[in-house]
Length: 464
Ligand SMILES: [Fe+2]
Image (cartoon, rainbow, N blue to C red):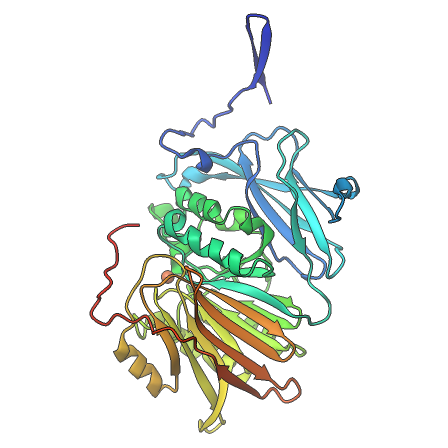
């Protein structure tokens, strides 16, 4: 970096020159939106086998003093672990934010590294930065075990609006409730306008270090495809691929890369789908994944809800019902985790015989949830319609920000929905015979009145 040296009295100050990109205009930006030489927006993701690999992505200003890198070592009680760290040179890519003309910052740089050959079930510490003094703190995470062990993860429905002002309390309460969660599933619509960098800035500030400590599993929602200018209308957020280093499934169309992938975590198969587009094209991939033997639990997540409590049947839900739902039933998926509808419902479908006969036993739990402040009402007419399709709705909620903690332990999969104030609102436990695949569900609804406000007695605030 070029330095400007100036002499005031006898003291010499050397100040780093601000290398403003020609197109950048930092006026009216909040200081924490502006990329600098210090790494920010540090986000940990799965990329390959979670027992031995993890990826990290971070951002700096356009001008980088030296090549960026990440370091990783087994975490020890003594700070000397840092001397044993292995260094990985980052892949760096420039992103011109002003492709969306409402962004003003110009060019920034994203860096990524995939840590490989890690030992299973081991606590690691990593940091990102460069040769200069611009480094992150050491951040710890645990690799997955090769054997099925008890673990938990967190699931969020849409954050979308008021992300810093109101969603921050949800992710922070989730961290307070399950700090040892191994990953966090974000079921789409993390922001409102897909390419708006000020909104992504809020999302990172709301989560802070949590985004770099929990491994994140992002799902693309419709708001990750909303553009403000014709060139990027209906295009995946320009930040998505630079800021999330996710698995690329080569056999899928390029358009779906890094939005459709699966994770094998200690006996659980988590499949992420893209409910925005090319849904039929994802079907062979979905079936190939679900066919794989050896999983104790199968969980699928996508953004648009199959059983939308507010919107009812939509074009997207019809496609989900046609293309994907038969596979959920055929392969005995345990949970389907969704967002989009800004309300809460948890329901379940029973096992059907090949002739369509409904058996009196549990097959798949369907959850629609919301973690941000924007809220819609549950429409009882839609829920009645869904009941004709066999859905038994167990618990609903409105005007409530939620997060969920899902725990796998032996032959049980426990689901808990909490409100953003930390109250347990809904609970159920699935028990499975791993030899036969037969399962039962135990509803454990807390003694809290269902938060349903039929006459709109809680009004949605005009802004957040
Ligand atoms: Fe949505």
